[in-house]
Amino acid sequence: MTSPNSSTSSSEGGFRYLGIAASLAAALLAALCLLSIKVKWFSDLPDYAPLLAYQLEKLDRSVGFDTVFVGDSSLGNAIDTETFDRLTGRRSANLALTGLFGYAGSYNMLRRAVETEPGLRTVVIMQAADMMSRTDDLRGYVLSTPRVLDPEIPEALRWPVAEAWVGELLDWQTLKLAIRAPLLRLLSRPVRDIVIENDYVKQASSRAPFGPVLQAKDVVPGKLDFLRRIAELCQARNLTCVYAHGPLAAELLDRSHGFFQAADPLIESTGLPLAAPEPVPLADDQIGDTQNHAAPNEKAAMTAFYATMLRPFIDADGWKPKEQTARTAVQPKP
Image (tube, rainbow, N blue to C red; front, side, top):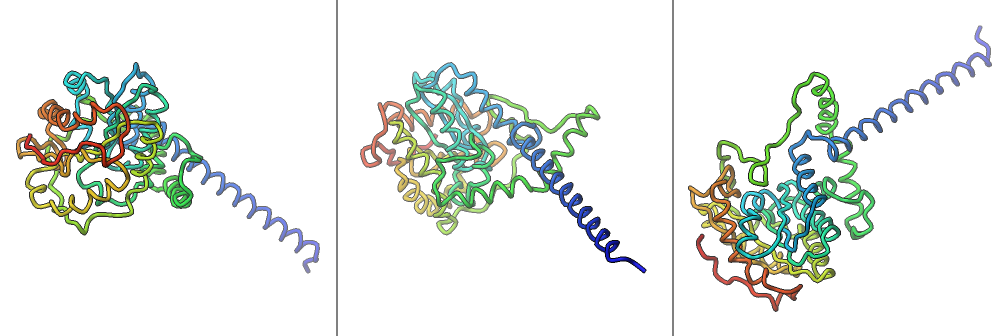
């Protein structure tokens, strides 16, 4: 016959073991989250991590620049800073990330640049032509933010950003990569990395299929949060800032005019002027590995074309309200 004391003791022991198991599970989850953080900001597993590190190194070793380009791969494959500086007399830095980071990545890179370089005068935001059709930039913010606890984030974005943080820390692909990387190193096998060629990620050897034609209904009106933050930062720092569409395959552009007629007023509503109302058209022999990338051998020529387009803004002395800033009315052919 079991005594009451014996039953109580067994129950207490069971609760104790459950408590220990729960504590171990919580510790394991915390460890996996820390590994996730390590992968995203200190490791070389996903392609975006080494590219972000490469661009941040430019700021760490900066010898002074007065013009900065922020944006995605359409920028990275279109602007050669040596050519741009020779044509404009400026000292520039190209901090292009990828489309994954969106406007939030450009905002975070600009924040870092203004803190690093007191002589900064001009900012060019160059994003993929279809950027206004893509979903929100919260993941790009989390991946590139200089501060985990960011007092500059508007109150309306704080909860969505917090949700994005949780999603990234618990992302299974991230955790799987975090476990895989040390194993590869132990086996002396290379971890996936990127190859830098002409100051950006080397293009693929074959061209990806084109996406669909862009239509006015594809525009995402709620995508402007971080673009507004860029405009506010430019105004607060008295910087000349301009938005330039990245280049686009001509055969897509010819059928996508309605998209830009819908997207441009939204972009300009943030206070940022547009360098031109539509992207630079890429002829078939000018296209690189995607519809948004100029071919590597076209980079210098593309830079020269953008230098001419951006000349009114490059020559400006400081931030000007949108209505006072020159704008290219007609898109010339490169």
